[in-house]
Amino acid sequence: MVLFLFLVVALVVVVAVVTLAVVGGGESAVLPEAPPERLANPLPPDRPVGRADLESLRFPVTVRGYRMADVDDALGRLGAELAERDARIEELETALAGARARSTGGFGATGFGATGAPGPSEAYGSAAGPYGAQHPEDAPGRPAPEEDR
Image (cartoon, rainbow, N blue to C red; front, top):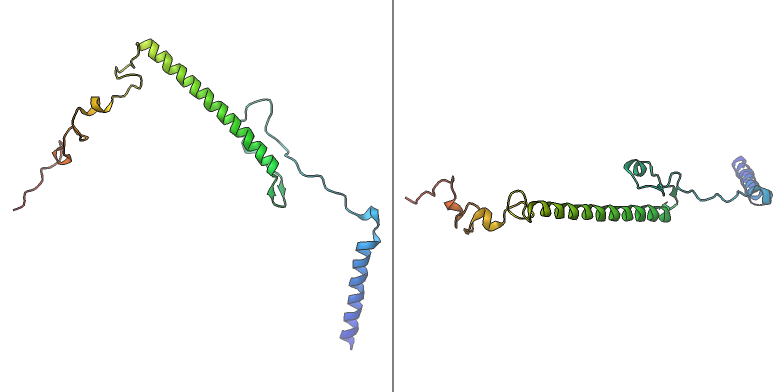
């Protein structure tokens, strides 16, 4: 009987607390909407992105992970800067190759053309193997095959 009275009193207390929490506070007790978190240190808009900028980049965490808009913006910016740098590198390499070709009269310093490397026929002659032999067993420095006795 004592246990029954204890359960009834506990149930009344729980119902009273829930009722006060839901109804009793009025409009002033409702929690205000929290503003969404934004990037604390976004990528710099006025200069190229550096290694330190990427290391300090921290995305705010939301219920489903990171804010997709922030991640998309950062990846878009990095992709654009990488494409710009790749284009600049290609432009500089083309200009360098042109300057080298003009200064050597169309041949590299080695005389093998613009790449500076010999072609396959220049390096190995007309033979098919890597040592200038038709068969790998004929290559210099390899022991002769043993005859069956």
